[in-house]
Structures are given as C-alpha cells and as structure tokens.
Image (cartoon, rainbow, N blue to C red):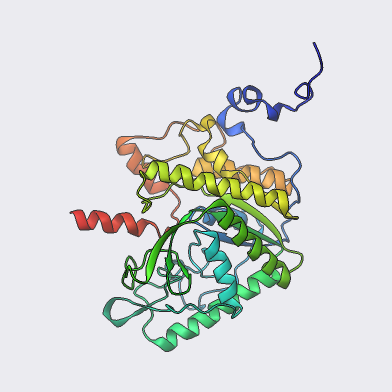
Length: 365
C-alpha cells in the first residue's frame, strides 16, 4: 500500500476518532496550536451578538480582564445598571449583529461618520438612539441628555479600542436594515424599538461574504491604526435568526446567514495576522451534541453548552483547565414542565432581536 498524506494525520482530522467516538463534552474542534494565547492580565474587549455576552461573563468569573470602560453612576444599583446595559459589553453599545455596524461604530466614535438619521422619537416624547435602541429603558428625556450620553459613550468606545490587548467579536447576522440616505446600518428595523419605518428611507440588505470580509478588514486596519498591538478573535453565534425579512423560510435564512459568516471568518483568518477564529458555533450545533445544548425553543443556548465552549476557550488560549458546573455529557434538552424550569435557569442575555417576535405575537393576538 502506498503512503498517502492521510496516514500521518492527527486524530482531530478523522470524524470517527474526534467526533463520533467521543462523549459530547470531550469534542474539541479548537486548533491544537492557536495563533496566540491569552493571559489573565490581557485587556479583552468584547462585542457582537447576544451570544458574545457569555464570553465576557465567564472571563470575569474566571479572573480574566474583560474590560469595562463605560460604567454606571456609583449610586445606581447593580440591577438597574444591568437594565441600562452597563457591563453587558465593554461599553454600552448594545448588540452589534453585522460587521458593518462594528465598522460604523469605530467611524462614529472617531468622528469619521455622522449618520443623517441620528435620533428616533420614542414614547411620551422620549428620544431613542437608533444605533443603541434598547440600552436606555423609556429613552432619553431630552436632547441634551441624549447628546451628553452619546459623547460619554464614544469616549468609552475609544478608550476600549486604544487600550485593549485582545478584541473578541461574535458575528451574529447577515441581515440588516440600512439607510438609503447614507448607508447607516441599524441594529433593528426602524419602527420596532423607536422611530418609524419608511420604505423611501430604509431598505433591507443581506450582507455577502465579500462585504463582510471587506468591512472587517477595514475595521481591523482602523483598529490597529490606534492600537498596533491589537489581536482579534472572531466567533460565530450559534443562535439562529428569530425572524427573517429575506423572503426565505427562517431555517433556510439562518443556514445561509451562518454559512456566510463562517466562510468570512476563515477568509479573514487566512489573510490577516494576529487574528483567529474560535469555533463556538461548531461546539454548540455540531452533531455530537445531538441538540442537547439548545433549550426547547431550539434557539436559547443552555448553560452546559456555554460551559463546554468556555472550557475549551480557557484551555486552548490560556492553558487553564477550568471547570464550570456540569462537565459530564449533556442530557437531552428537557420538555414540558421541565422545559419551563430549564428556561428559567438559562442565563439571561440582552437580545435586541427578541422584540421582533414579541411585536409579531402582539399584532396577531
């Protein structure tokens, strides 16, 4: 028998040895030699979709420096601070679902882009930030309060970008709503959490691989312009779309969206230095888990799944074997009354998309 390139491959290259033959909690799709490591003193800035919130939470619990540059007033209780989105991410920017939102945030923080549509009307005369529509319950009371808060926010964003060691960004969606006037991207469709939808001013856009690669390449170039040492970790959120405006079934739309994001991450990893992809998407949704890492809604990620992701994150990047709660192979997702109890135990994350389903159910009731 002739010698082939397959003879000397490691076990991780074979499905049976590294996936089918292992208990779910032992499946490890992370590269054996990551491009760079992580230490407890590294300042880590987090941003992205709702799944990204888990990374910052686990980092703080484990003694790592998940940066917070925008803090609440000392007189505000921790509960109220969380309600106002302080501490969810490094700064109070809310969920950033698509790559162009991230690029847009950088440019706005550094005065390189000012959207024409910069404020929405809310309830009872309040003002809503179109680019952070749910960070301020009941909106801002006045334009002065709105402008002061935004200036403080941009200062916190700049501090994060300029002082971080590692930037972790979780890509969540390809679908977005864009201003026809200047290309500004909103995290939610206008009219869902403030403002009003106008087909003459707003349009749906489904971002492509090439657009996402271009947007993130430009963002990383700008980031390293203010912080040359910045290292970047990209992940893809396993959380499916809660609704799709693409005209496709939401399952097909989700498959398309996640596939595009995953391909974009690999293309960036192949072309940019000090950038790596971390496979949290594969850990949660791979067939080894048999759906056990998802709650009954097939959307929320159970804590046992998050723990699996974060064990690998710390083991491979920081050389730390940390255990988080249940480490045995996950049981199947519960059903019925047990499912209700399980949902109550799920870690709460701030997910702007939830308002889309809430409004649809309200309209149809």
